Image (tube, rainbow, N blue to C red):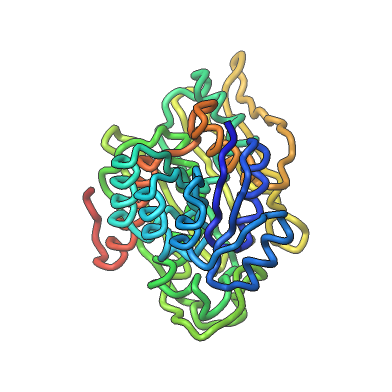
Length: 359
């Protein structure tokens, strides 16, 4: 059974959605964007027959749509997802799931009431290296993960000054929100334990310094620059596990580091990004390592996987379609996303109050 999908937002990530949906046999019928020229250009590039100016217009014109994909600034994730779910459509939404747990809870409620699938663009779960690690976890090689460290730090990587990424009203926050992939991946490896307490600090030392702008993101604008540039946190869980978090756009660090490291009762492990010579991430390659003991010797295993130049984005979008069709289990769920957003909320609250937050 083929599924017709409509995309809201003709941003950069939308192209990966198109490729993933097509790989799973779905058809992108329409792309909606308030910028008519942007929508037309995207539609022409990807062979999409129709364009619209909004989700509302798209749903009215194409009631046969089976699903909606959302690729917009974070502020609009929740209202658009809820509108689509209430219209009886499955929803695939880019990360972060929402700006906070309140918005995510409303999305989850709408999904449960509609009986439709709600998934998010946590592409790092779909990367070959992550899935290889999951196999070792499922086979009991690692045992119980006792502790983990989630890191995504950039030395000079603020994504534009005065664009929507740096405006808290539109984005929900800085690197805690923008770079939450490794937090999510660590929780995924750990089995999404229930968080108990969060202690965190955030900093904004280089928020107004153009020398710390990165080569990505959007052009400088006139919006606010009112989000953190770095954050450090410790999360404890009800079953005794713990997670250290370090996220930054701008921080005095040797280089960019993107990794999840964990220590289990039988083995430890690490999934870490490799880097190009210019210091920026060579995003199509991760390393996957296991640290264990064999025959009385300390052993480091290097797990070799295929290279994925799409960084799991195509595979994750494909999994959404296959999940809707009942052919695959979803790689992520809204219940997991709610746990993630509760942790990010607690990071900001702990930093604001300079005290631990009990969940």
